[in-house]
Amino acid sequence: MSLPSMRSRTHLTTPQRAAEERSLQAGGGALVIGFLAGFVVFFGDHPALSGSGSIGVAAAVVNAFVALAAFAFVVGARVVKRVRADGRPPWLYLLDVVALALSHAALAYMGSVALFAIFQQAFIGLRLDAFAAALLMAMTAGVAAYLTATNAQHLTTERVATLLAAFLIMGVLNAMMNTNQPDWWHSNISALGTASSGTASTFNITLLVAGVLIVTLAHFVLADMRVFSESDAGAIAFTQIQALRQQAGQRWLRLFGARGWAKGVGQDRYLHPKLRPVYGCLVLMGVGLALAGLVPVDESEFLHNTGATGMVVAYGVLVIALPWWIPGLGFTFHVASGVFVTGVIVSALLYLPLGYYNLTAMELIAFALIFTWLILFIRQVASVPQQEGAAPVEAV
Image (cartoon, rainbow, N blue to C red; front, side, top):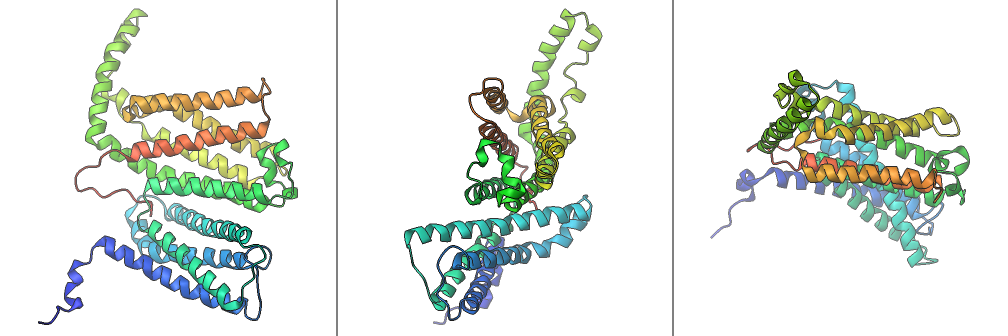
């Protein structure tokens, strides 16, 4: 008995299988590129794993390149179609794609440098020939391209939020660990972006790209919030809140003699989700962070601080007004939001006027709370069950 031809099974191909095949193709191509690049660069040499002129540096450059190529390989075919389908201007969509591609490339670069530095500490004094170096570069390039392609297959809002957190943490830590000013933390975290720090480009580009990523997130959070407002969960929440606000609002307004206003409390126009203000605050947060990276503190302290302060103010307005703008997110989440805002305020008070710690500690705690809340907010909105048969909102 003969086995059926594999060609007859093409109808069994699923979107998941096709996505996995694209990821494997990207990884396989990157593996070949990494091996050839490593063999050519280190031919006749015996490089170390980490440091200047090492395998780690060459691998980081190659991995950033193959990550960009893998992202373009997966996303490029969808760009024109999405530009035509979306209502956003093409340049704005292109900005999103560029920010996502650069963040993947930067993660591949920084991850490779860190990985080879760790192995150099484990194998002190180890040097390899060109063939072994090429094998290492091939493996890391294949992994970088495969992971990038896999993540780019379905860039949902939650995945972009995770990408933002990983990129920001790795970028800032990289700047901290490689600065030539060991006492930078005596002043503030913005000292990492000054010309004398030695890591100005790393720190400032991290803030700039992270700010653009937040703007990218704002676009897709807006889409997720629309799904939320149209979902059954959102409708039930808005109906329940309408009844509660109507009872409480009329009672308080009548107490103050505003009987005319009390008649309108609880109507739909007061309860319909206000998505644009939420979107605007998220965009302002991203623009503020990008401005802080675009203008280092040693070039213009006023503009740098304006960007950083604007981001914090936009965050505060968003958290405080969110129960009125998006009332159906849930009581627990709004209580948690209040805890986060309180944490930011307490961290500021511990610096000034109490003087418990310095400005750097206050900035690290405040920004950690802000970005943790942002990720929780995105997950909260994206976790709402969608309508039956609806496809998840994808970034690109």
